[in-house]
Length: 121
Length: 106
Image (tube, rainbow over all chains, first blue to last red):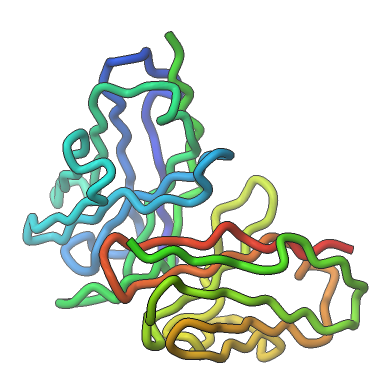
């Protein structure tokens, strides 16, 4: 059974860097596309970006200047790094799998349970 | 980016009734549209992809139709566990975008 689990600090300070990790079990990270999606009351669901095991990544232009997604195949994990955070980045952050192999399918068949990250000054 | 508008915002129904949810795209997305169900405190669950294909394990009472800019999710014969928020999401253009959601309540 495929399972994803987010981990990391639940609190970040304004203008600092938010870092989260997604641990994947039941599915090799050396296949598929691995995504981050966030959900906030103000902006609803927002796709952040994805990474493929080859290292190829694509980001939402609205966040591109501040986002890095990386992958550690030896640990079957991938990570999100978001710099210079503000209160607007307060959200539940989800990791999710795109079932595409070779080509991204553009939808998400498995999700982590989500992690609330609060940005405070 | 493509904007998805869902209507109505809230749908009040009873178990056994049919729910008809709408998603309209700001430009054509062909059939590259997915639907998700989300319950409080849970992650979204994939119901439908590519407009009309049910995801693995999704009951037949969930069906999706549409192409271009207008899409419909139908939940026939609502079960108590179907009361939730439903989102559409397009994959036609990057960035991937979601609609604002429709809440199906009792």
